[in-house]
Image (cartoon, rainbow over all chains, first blue to last red):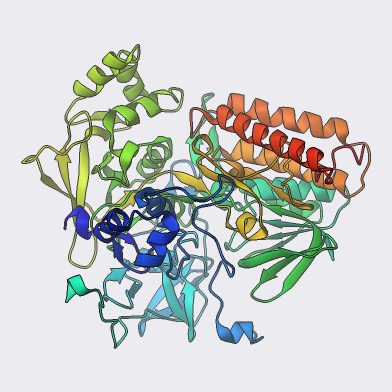
Length: 89
Length: 112
Length: 418
């Protein structure tokens, strides 16, 4: 296996090649890279690949320096619909 | 159970613990009470906890403290339970999930 | 309503909870793990004075102190979201219940940043912290023979812990160079960062490296002359001139492909060799796990010296949001003792902000104690951590000045109590 085929986002199986190629082709910021490739959008919420997606990103850093490049959204842990609906454990 | 560190030069001997019986993919195993499901399975030599939904590639624990969700299994019918954070209990049924039947088509033109 | 809620039962969270409860507040601690202690649980190393720092014992001490002070500890309870309402009440959402408080401390610690290596999704590949927890907390061997990818203070310490538990570590080596591994794949930068923590770094490496420390040219020479088979530390080869370029195995880890690298970390073609192993550890370092502070709306700064994005906070552990505090590795990557000292400070600040008088002096001493603990630390994850702390302090002061300029209320309640 080469670096190109190496997985970066384990949840969505997005490879190093896809990320580097996309970042180059579209001059992507981290957020755009995430939206284009789905890297960081899987089950874990991007907790594992977040630092690597940041490193793959290029292009103008449009966000203010007081904000995180890749936004966090609740729920921070997956919740089943059953549990949301009040089902007891 | 060969995987256990029974004697440790600094941490000492492993305290006496009660063993419980649980099942993983319909096979019975013993685990020390208080062990996480992941630790109990590893002590039995089992590393593969699930298969990726899309590619079917095998996965095991990665972070071991609940951050990465790679160890998620189905416990007593409840899916998405982290094996690294859940203690084994007597009679517990643990199942790994596998590749889903209808994969997503790669829609990008370069992959036609 | 609980007076104080603490998210995270590590050294910072438990210390804060104990202090706040000892001042008479009722405190609830929430953590998603099965045991209290957080990352402290897995730690095991020899202090410079020859005594052992045993994370399990230290966690038990912190837990007992908190329990004796009347703290309620809810384990196995993941927090999904936190939210504030206009009247200064914080809601903490978990699967089962929603808790409310006026004073919320986030002490969620750190997450591991990976260095990616082809094949790293195979079962048997785990973060170096995962191997530490498996070995020291669960007392189950992560495998019989392992390879650690990524040479840093954390991975060197854990390599020693594996060895202590009777697990063979075949090699501590670099990851292959690509745009994501960067510094961690550069032999010179790795050697340099290890030598900055000389009192902790594997001593044979220091003995070897210190001869070359004087200037940049010598440092380069140091890497050039670095023995191809590495320098042994506790019998584990530390291989600064070798990189793992692939992890192989049919369904689980069977071994790694290693190659020699130049002093810049470029792979030398034709030097590839296969090393058998049944487990592999990935060691890319730690970054502050700040997701809850982010959803709460804290401003963040990217400070490399602190390990990544940290929420804006002051020395008393207050954030810019009323009633929201942070302590421990969420504020920057440091050892457990610094985290505990920050927790103590946060606990006192919360007590003062809850209307308990006469704490000003005690808070000042607690802040001093954080600095002393930092100065005496035998492990320093980032050599420039003090600079990182200064940057965040400057940002706080800028923020406070900006608020004064607009006439807004300054969140810090420093003058309110006393």
